[in-house]
Amino acid sequence: MTILQSTSHSASFNLATEEYLFSQRTDDILFLYVNESCVVVGKNQDVLSEVDVDYCSAQNIPVYKRISGGGTVYHDTGNINYCFISNRIQGESPLKADFLQPIVKVLTELGIEVLIGKRQDLWLPGGYKISGTAAHVGKSRMLHHGTLLYDADLEKLEKSLSPIAVEKTTRAIASVPSPVLNIRNYLITKNLSAPTTEAFFEMFTLKLANMYNQASVTKLSTEEISLIEPVTVVV
Image (tube, rainbow, N blue to C red; front, side, top):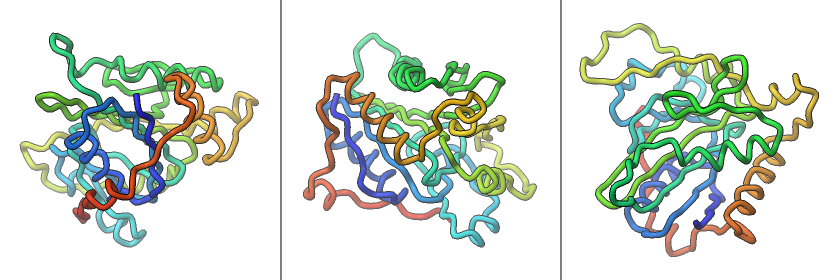
């Protein structure tokens, strides 16, 4: 497993990097990144039914579409993103929740009790969602990626994902709203250490690297960066 960490906070670049790693490489990869404020919509969703585009425009929050299905999510620098990309194994379902086990193990080691939900999402005790996931499956490769709320702006999250009522596009798949909570707030209520997002991300990454017996994380090469074409803004 190659653990790759992005040096960019551009959602446009990081989403494009996921597509590049999926289509142009053949190794097993765990890609980690943090985006600036944005909204990311599933490929089968209708933007106007999922996003308050006027609010996002006023707040300079760009909206993108990704290659995977799943629901619409809000990202910012308090939100950590993980993406597992690997080759498919003949006879095994590509849509199992096994990919979440490393994330669960690391969070548990950091004092965070989590449960895997029926939609391959992660929940804190009390019924609060901290991570939603989505998948993209090809003939030979599969991609599973997810968000992890650590210290995100939950007010902006709620407002950006609360669209004005519009007529639904019949073939679009609607998101399923869930109560959310930042991991940092959970740690505070448990009287546990609640580090900054940067410090938490560093610990999170280091534990994942240790799990896969990696001495360090890697970065994209200059040549690879030149080959990645950032995705365009939808709204």
